[in-house]
Length: 179
Image (cartoon, rainbow, N blue to C red; front, side, top):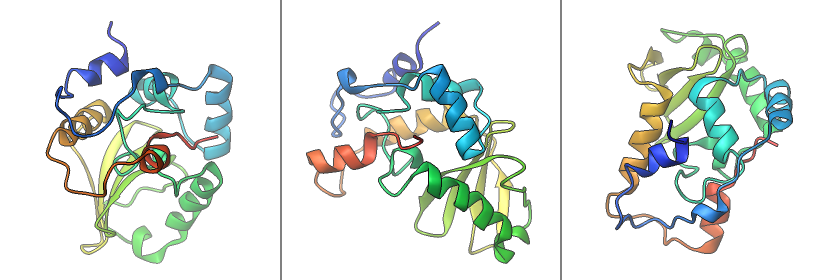
């Protein structure tokens, strides 16, 4: 069986414009996963577990914080717990069609797109959901977590038109922040 890193690398083009350094990839240990699970109210299994074990501390540039919040510099385990509770108490979200209790279902905000669209991973069953704040709806995506990760890596192959890639951006977008 291929490692998660090797599986994802199959989708990275050799001329991908984003930096990648395999030697920087680091995962969490088993004891740390238990601490993360308890501290962040997350169920850690399946491909989410593989991700954290293989590259939860640092993705080496294979995955980036704008697609996976655990690597984003705004993310922290303390903020995560408050976020689950805030979403549960948010009148707008809690009344959206397709609502799932973010605390009960152990929600992880994967990414926010254009400030109003959110990719959500409910870790109790590793299901992906799409929340549209404009439409006040939350819909189950017919996509596995692994398929989501693959789509992220494929998107990185496109010409990069964003912020210039510098060491600071790499540090703020590729280092895990669950501990």
